[in-house]
Length: 173
Image 1 (cartoon, one colour):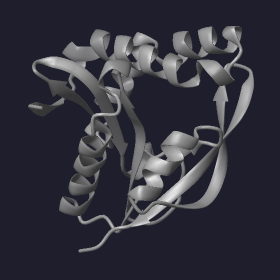
Image 2 (image 1 turned 60 degrees about the horizontal axis):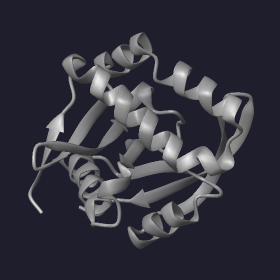
Image 3 (image 1 turned 45 degrees about the horizontal axis):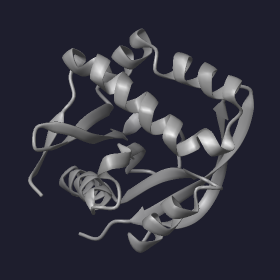
Image 4 (image 1 turned 180 degrees about the vertical axis):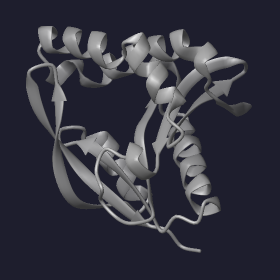
């Protein structure tokens, strides 16, 4: 399967919103009340908010392109853009999502490997992320990539406070 990884710019905000909303809804609909989902998708992926995130120098977004089609995306954060101060000199994988038709084809590995390569190139000692406590498939995926649970935090979806496990990986040099 031929793929490329493309940095996302402001010109891509509409496509990023579309992919973000679809992948979040598919992933978390089974656990989330309809009103909470509707509110989250409207507020968290609102245009001006997403433009601020894209423009933040400590955040970066990337599309995974398969045969010129968006298959999914990655968002990484460093510095003050991280959602938690989990470790010094760390890179956060805040979002890693694939559209349903591209799942179970090894493409999650491509995005996670890209994040890790980026972290190593930038001299980071750690990589970390949050994963929903009920998302067992994702937990197994990250465990295979040597992430281990070190903490947890609340992730607000509408009026529903959900628990994310915080997973950490020490990077080798």
